[in-house]
Every structure is written in structure tokens, then in C-alpha cells.
Length: 231
Image (cartoon, rainbow, N blue to C red; front, side, top):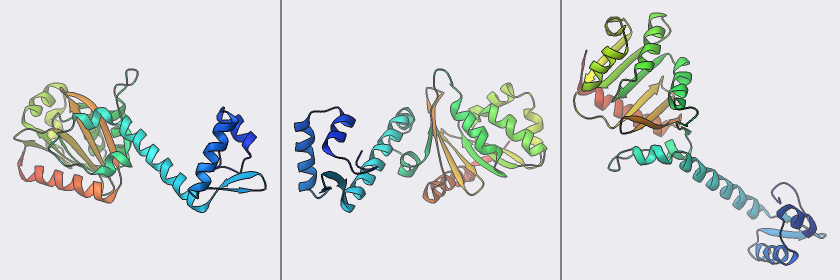
């Protein structure tokens, strides 16, 4: 494409697979809008054209990320505000038929590198709790986990070392009364993860180290912390 190097009309026809008239008409329109310039029979992007191309590429990439996160976005409460950067610039992880645990795999990968974990979750994420407990016991992490009231009994059933986890130094498990519509996980003071649920199943997750997104996640966690009690 012209974004890579100047091309003549024949090269453009071969690359795009369109007719001579189509290439000629399109080039004339681009020249008219000062996006393309002709030099010695070859066509190149102008400075303005290169800036427009970069903006277009970023826009298309943003749309693709939004499409990847469609299920997550639609699972989140419509009446709650979420930072756009989580979806536009964040890393989206969605479950797939061949990899249903992709969001949790990403959670485990990011979490293993963090020294401090803070989370509020409707389910408590039993697999996540087991990892946290192991890392806290090893002196590698500290963690605070706010879970929904109903989730405490599920965690007791799903994780056979729950009583030990609840007593572990450096691991605080708290019960939060009221409904929790989504999960937020803070990794140190650097990254935030947002998890959405659809009928109790994970719909996807978004991870971001954008400062505004992290501060949003921190506020959500602190609001939950004020309303929770230690298990």
C-alpha cells in the first residue's frame, strides 16, 4: 500500500485487484483531498495523508478490540459507567469454545507477577483463591478479596483449604452484602482487570495499565471495602 512505499498505477492495480479506471478515479479523489501526491509517475501519501492513515488504522484497531469485547461489554450493567480505555486500549480476553478459561488464564498470568492483589468479585473465583493462598503462604504476595455474601459458602465448598486461607497472614477474605454485578482486580498499583458475567458464567475480561482506568478500579474496590466485613 502507499503507506509502505510510493507505487505507480500498475502496482496499485495488481495489489488491490481492481480495474485501471477504479485506481485512476480513486487516486484523483485522494489527490483532490491532499492525501496523495504524484511524483514522476508514482503516487505517495502526503504528510497529511500519512497522519490520516495512522488515525484510520488506530480507529479500525479500536473497532476490532471492541468487537473482541462485545460479549463482555453487553454483559456489564448498562446503568454503570466504565472507563473507555479499558475497551479501547486494554487487552481483551474472551472465553472460546476451545479455551473457555482464557480470562482466568490471563488473570493467573498477570497475578503471578504482582506483589499485592486487591479484588472484589461476585463469585470469589475459587481457582484464583487457591493461587492467592499458595502465593501468600510462600511469602510472595499479600491479598484482599471482597466476595459476595452467597459466594462465601460456595468458596467453602469449592476450596477445601478455605478455613486455612481465611486465617492466613497476608490474605484477607471479606464478605460484601448486596449484589455485585462484575469483578474488579487490582494488581499492585499498576494494572486493573474487569470481569463481566452472563448468567453466572464468565463473559470476558479486560486488562489495562491506563492510570485513569486503574483509579476507577481502585475507587470501586475501596467502595466495596467500606461495606464489607471480614470472614
